[in-house]
Length: 318
Image 1 (cartoon, rainbow, N blue to C red):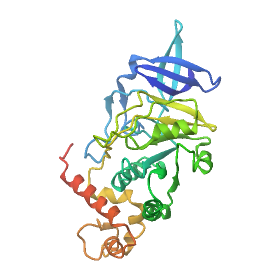
Image 2: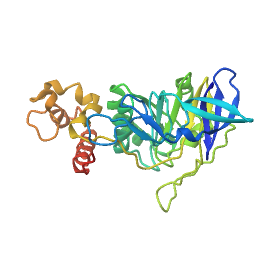
Image 3: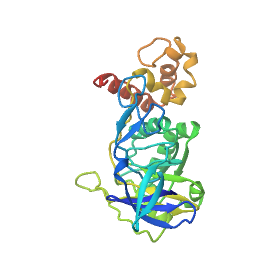
Image 4: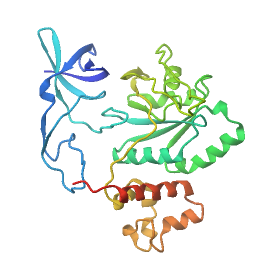
């Protein structure tokens, strides 16, 4: 069996890169991939319910862009016969084995959303992914508005997140951006209309990906990316995926949410109830104290409270 990884998916056709020859192969998926028996240790076995222990189950596994696969030839047709274990597995965008995620946000049209940023960062923590924040459309706001956004984002910079400000049309900021792609599979993710395809076209001219500006009437964009594909760039790969305006993370218990807030975790030992503090209604909470002192942004804490309420309100699923 030969080894490759999936570069592109259009409908049920998979473009593979052979790991030895680097040749591109067009393949289909064998039917046996549809029903696989997964034990509790399988990387494909995701926790979907409130049960604390994963169970052996039979489920369908579909190949994704980024998957490492085994394939073979049968009568001049190439078939994917095996999907290798995944180190991570994103749903929206639908891609596996990612090294880092470029979270693309615009200054305006649509407005920068700290709520969406905090949602993304939870998923990055869950999947052990490195986030890199790219802020686009800096040419559409005045200096005062841009500086205000930079001040608000400084908290995230202090958390260790790299932040870049770019003007894709004039290639401003690109001189410090291109190095981050080397030897990595990188996903571009963000709301529709923030300029993911425009950014990708500016990074790699000649792709001519379709772009769609935000509708003035609706205040939102339309999906313009029709398939998922890896594009070779700077000795690595970039994934372009359809835009979306809503993302979901799977957390079943309020107590688990704080795990994905490293900045809260770092000071929880100072809370009256220590690691048992949920940072919600408890007295003597260091996190709430720091919010009052403006050492933690109010928006980040408000998002945390909202996420906690959503987790509490969800229906039990066993």
